[in-house]
Image 1 (cartoon, rainbow, N blue to C red):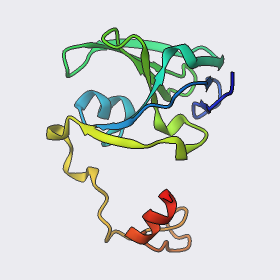
Image 2 (spheres, rainbow, N blue to C red; image 1 turned 180 degrees about the vertical axis):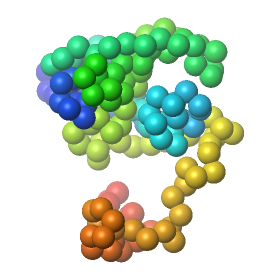
Image 3 (cartoon, one colour; image 1 turned 45 degrees about the horizontal axis):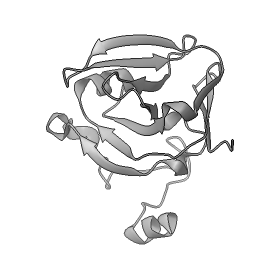
Image 4 (cartoon, one colour; image 1 turned 30 degrees about the vertical axis):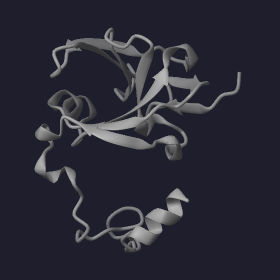
Length: 154
């Protein structure tokens, strides 16, 4: 079986491999996703459970009824706390891997947004904000344009 995707948590304690079709990614703006990621939204990438394998470490699980009314189990690294993936008994054939854990971020192809009525006003990054190639004080970054976006996708 060919490994299509690999990923890991921040500290590297928990790592995974995946073989199978990479499903669509989505942005979720619900309060639970904001809280579990510590950010404005979550980006989840759908994987088939059958092709997913934990290679190292053992993620810890936390189950809670989500804003949708359905139970969700969120898996995270017990060492660094990084969220890794989410599962739901509503869709037992899938897991939703946190996009930021993938070794290759180019595999992420968002197709839609959920719970947009709950999006925080600061979730869209204003293009007029100063931008730097690395940290504040590094080389100022040129703001991406529509042409740049086409080059990245093409």
